[in-house]
Image 1: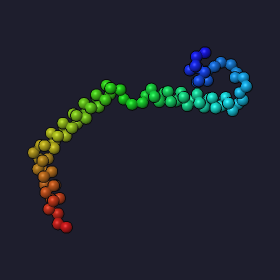
Image 2: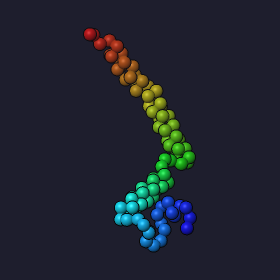
Image 3: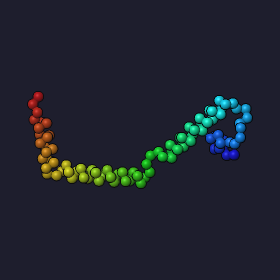
Image 4: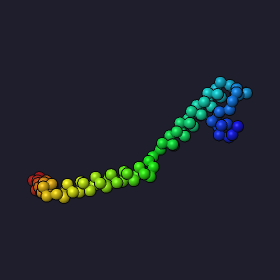
Length: 89
């Protein structure tokens, strides 16, 4: 039996000298370890997902830049800023 099997409590047969409480603690520990292993397997994105995300963000930024720098939107933004600066207090 390997050390991993022993740590995860996968040994076969009834354990000698350990009561019900010890078996329950081992079962809880085994469940916790298996859950942590599964969580690590799916933690975060891989490099290809980061690349796709960056490309999508750049494409969105380029589209937004085109919209904001267009003539009509630029005039509206200048009007909004102008009205905000000329507000009387």
